[in-house]
Amino acid sequence: MLTEKIKVLFQFVDFLHSQIDFLLSKQELIVETNELLEKRWSINPNDNYKTKIEYDAINDKFCRNFDTLEELITIPFKQKIKELNIANIGNVSTYINATNDLLDLTRNFNQTDIDAVNNARTKYIEFRSQTNKYHCGMPEFFNELDITLNRLFKFFSDNNFPALEIFKAETTEVQNIGDAVRLIQKGYNGTIQLNHHTMQNGMHATTNGSNNNLKYQAEKKTLDKPTFSVLEWATIFYYADQAKLLPADSILKNRITEFMREYQIPTSFNYFKGRYYNAIKRINEDQDFPIGKLRFVMPFIKKTYKLAVTNIENDILLLEEEKKEY
Image 1: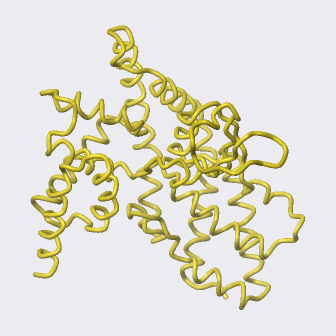
Image 2: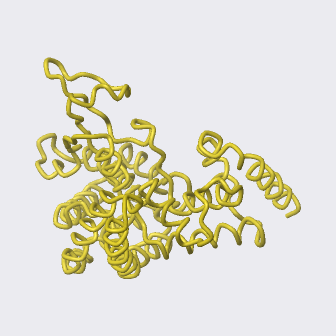
Image 3: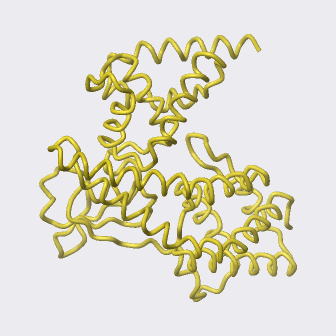
């Protein structure tokens, strides 16, 4: 039977379907922003003054586009997700709240339930296919939603239902590790096929039969490249900067920009800066920063910024004490 959580989830699918025309009207801006991101990643502003000028010009345009998309698409979509309580976005991992109810539905259902699932399936597949699987600035959320709904749709579909092709993992061949990392950071969740010339990189992989290409599943652990939310990256920056472990520069903007470039963080400077100040306030003033996030970034900080470990450990203890008092 359809529980309240499932009804709300299907209501969210209705909302997504209603936004198709709006998202298509922003397609040109979305494509341009992705192209600018690719260009920004390809330029090292530290090479010489010409690349610095080029990088700054591209980054400025990207930041303006990113902020526009954030305001027009990401923020309203997040508000709808929170309003309907669809998932725990913003946490270390994303979980669709109706997941268990959907599993129960596959055990106890009637014809009315089947009709509702079929309606949701048609609308969701139309949304994902017509918008080119655009993640609306939330790749992890839509990846989890795809996986969750695909299980449900497959159960209530004939095995040869053609529209389910939209959920099949894609395979993309790249020429180097940097390209693979960029795909992952943009939310790509298919298979990344690395050209055999990169075999010497020494990464865990499997060989596909007779060909010499390496296939990599696009998951966080695969390339050992950390995937954090912007708030988590900003928190890492805070501790590294606090311990004076970043390249010396008296201007905060320059330190942030270099940090974002080094780790290829796909966001705007203004948004990153906002998350940075938010982390500082919640750690030191409000003392309500999620302890789980600090523990989540701790292994990376231990590996990359060892001298910052003591500070983060002390803050975890303080936050735990503050939590006990309440």
